[in-house]
Each structure stands twice: as C-alpha cells, then as structure tokens.
Image (cartoon, rainbow, N blue to C red; front, side):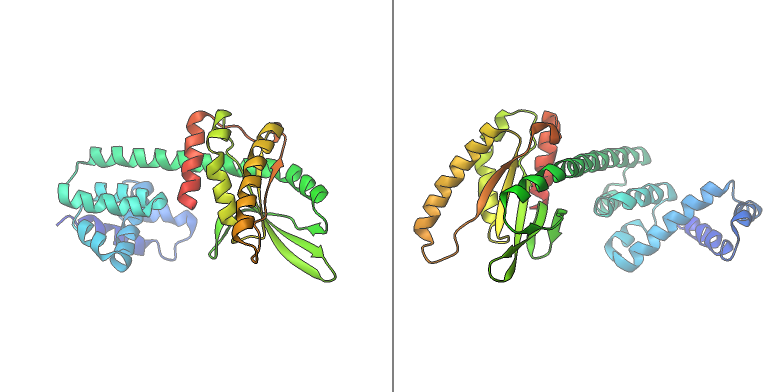
Length: 279
C-alpha cells in the first residue's frame, strides 16, 4: 500500500487545528516533518484525494494506492484544470507513467492554460478599449437612451456576445430593446476580414433571434461598406421570406482601428478558437 503518506498528512492536518499562525511551523517540526512546506504539500494532496473520494469515485479508485509524488502533482494540476487532472489520473492507473512523464504533462497543461488565459485577457482589454467609442457612436446613431453595456455578456438563454446594451425607446410608451455588438476579429492579417465576413454575418443574423438588434464592429470604412453590402443582400432575401414576421435588424459600426487591439496571426487563431468554444 502506498497510503502511508495519507496517514501522515491526515495527522499533520489534525495537528494544525486550532494553532495560531506563529505556532504552525513549530508544531510540524516537533512532529517530525522536515519543513512546513513538505507538510503543506502533503495536506494539499490529501485534500485532493478526499475530494475525489466524495465526488469522483472512479478517479479516486485509480489513485487510492498511488505514491505521494504522483498525487501531489495531480493535485496541482487539478487546481487549474480538474478535467485534465482526472483524465491523467485514470491514464496513470492504466499505464503507471513515471513521475517524470506526469511532470512533463503537467508543465504542458499549465502552459496551455496560461496561453488561453492570456488570449482571453487580451480579448477583455480589447472590449474595454472599444467600449467608449462604441457607446459614443451608438448614442449618435440611435434615438432614445442607451444603458452601459455588459461586457462579454453570457446568459443561459442566449449565446455570448462582446457587448449587450439595453436600449430605451420612447414610442408613446417606453420600450426596452436589447442590442448585441460583436467585435469582428480583430485580425492582424486584414485579408481575414474579407475572407471570414460570411461567417460573422451569418452569426449576426443568428444572434438576431436572441437580441432585438445586432451590430458588427469593424475597424475601417471600406470594411464597413463591404459587410453592409452583404447584410443588405441578406435583408432583401429575408424580406421575401418574412412578409408577416419580424424582419432582421443587423448592422455595422466602424470604430477607428487605433481603438481595436490587433493580434498576431497565432493570436488570431487562438481568439477564433475561444469564440468557437463559447458558441
């Protein structure tokens, strides 16, 4: 059995109950631990095992007799990617990978997580930089009043969008309508704006079932006209199909290029994947 470390970690956990901060390390040293950090790592691994026992029986069975070195690394993995950690635990049980192999897999997983977080952080900064000029443009375009937008809006009943506004229109009585706005790209390679315009326009028309009006944000006037011309074609076709139904309301807003964060080609693909994952 490789469970001796579990008993030691549980004893350390009990030893620390009720101790003040200044007493913790002294108590662990007195109990025979080499240093407080070793005890903390063991307790973290124990908490991971206890969590699995209560919530993921299959993964717990795979690790119940695993050595501390394996469980400790998987506990660190679980902190940022629980699904990946569980998958790796089950694979380890079948193949008994070495500690070095698990360490390499953990490093790769952490790097992937860091890259994804960086791309989403960059997308968040882009939304923030575009917000003020977008609101100014919409307030000039639209009658009535416009709320502050919800950024990176997500709701159970609708797909995610970069901005979601409430639009208050006084038409004899005040009506509240919703506006969704999507930043197209942004792309480092400007040819991608044309290459992918059909995908974005189709997405905008699809979103129009969830929001009263949908706007695509592009960085240049020529792109605005390019997207608008295709939207006019789509609207014309829709008019023939929806004579007695609500017509689509999809448009384009041009925000100066300087306000929109530009990405490298690699970042373009990463952001596209983020949007695909959220769809």
